[in-house]
Length: 449
Image 1 (tube, helix red, strand yellow):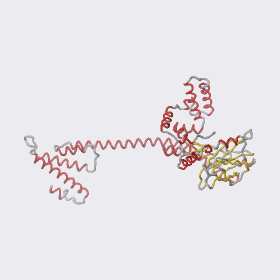
Image 2 (cartoon, helix red, strand yellow; image 1 turned 30 degrees about the vertical axis):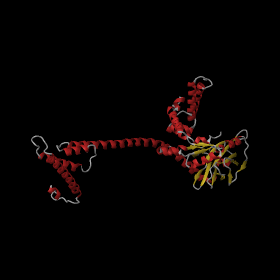
Image 3 (cartoon, one colour; image 1 turned 90 degrees about the horizontal axis):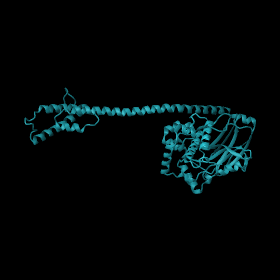
Image 4 (cartoon, helix red, strand yellow; image 1 turned 90 degrees about the vertical axis):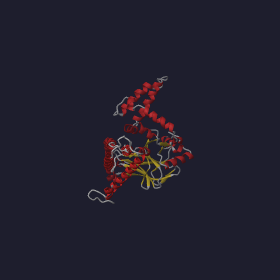
């Protein structure tokens, strides 16, 4: 049960790419085992057993295809037999499984000082690091070699060690329900553990709650109230940053029922496990009967029922949201396309209008303006084009088809350019009624023209 080595912090791009490629080649676990998506736990287990018997390496020692099928069936069964992994796969496919597996889970007692320092630094930087209960502690508990004390308040436990407590409860207390809570005003990290007795006199871990910040303290609690109660595990922060929408709709996926929700009369065993990187964890622990808290008990039952209902509503809302979002994206794309089409048509119309001229200057100007979006000055430019067309038509061409001497052409071109600039200047200020107020439809400058 020893945790992974600290080297699991390291990750190469090549390994990530290979993992992504492997994920892309994997088959649907339901397809591999030959069961439907609504298959029960027993149906999944039976399907895996059939495949395991058929393709087990012991029966197919020299058959690489059978070995691959056995590994594929095992991988699929590991997903579908785990309620959390099955839920993640059903909602987001293999990507969710891979993202969840990227969270580090370490047995801090197996790390040396240097690696512990790095683990603490990564944790401070926001890297999600899950810690496990030391294998030594679990083994000692299973062998019945742990020291068990009567429940006391206000103690501290060394890092990666545990304090065990026993408590005797009566039939009445068991019926009314009990709550075990531990908190640390020093904001220490710890785990609250519940153990069940084994036939050999040892203890096996049945429940585990990690401490979490609640205001100015860290706390963890277990509620044995005789009806289903739930634990809430936060989403992977890295995955949430990558896809906030999916993180929102999956926010309540971590709201899952606790394995034990009631205790019978007799002796029960709890433990507090120090989970700090370096310092001892200071804490207080108490077990209270729920009888004086009947109102809170009903409020908890009510609010958790609402959360479960909200989780179902979110699932339906996600389908509606995705549909509307896809429609919105489609409409946005069409909006841009329609705008571009309109601009192109108006530009083409303007280009056609501008082509009705024998003036080379206007031809060059209209040619250079093709492809530009129409502006507010389009109408004024069209009006000027008409005026220029009238002028060019009123000037007869030489009988021999020549354009006259070079000097005359240059003067005419310069005059046209000067007149074009003057017309634009006059029109610009006429529209804004700043310099030339209109009088009978003309302006002083236009009269000079």
